Image (cartoon, rainbow, N blue to C red; front, side, top):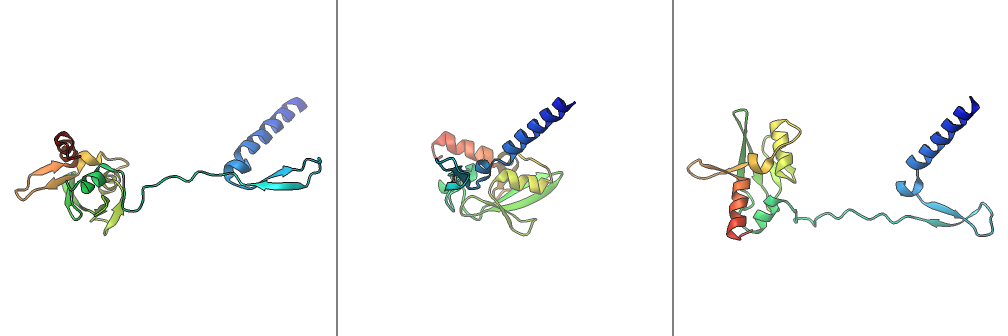
Length: 154
């Protein structure tokens, strides 16, 4: 019975060391001195690579690329129809989506804004959001993007 308890204890301690690894958690790590004493001689702070995010105003979405290429402009209204209800949003100057129904909440991607508008976990935003011309004809953002790619504008 003691071997089972010892094995469990060793596994538990190994698991704790893995979960609470100070390097992985970004905590300072102390190294023992060369003389063999237990006093730390140096503290090493692991270098954690910062996640690169696009600079402010420089999103990397298809909508942002279309705004940068002047295929879409800031202030363009887009519409998503879900269960016979139109949900409106506005594209801002850097390609973000400002959802009208939530009081102007900004979203970085059309997928996120579409999921919120629909009340679902996911949304194919490029397919679901449309621009509407003066005659009321709606064109999906995906179709608009595909046309721009085909013409070389994007």
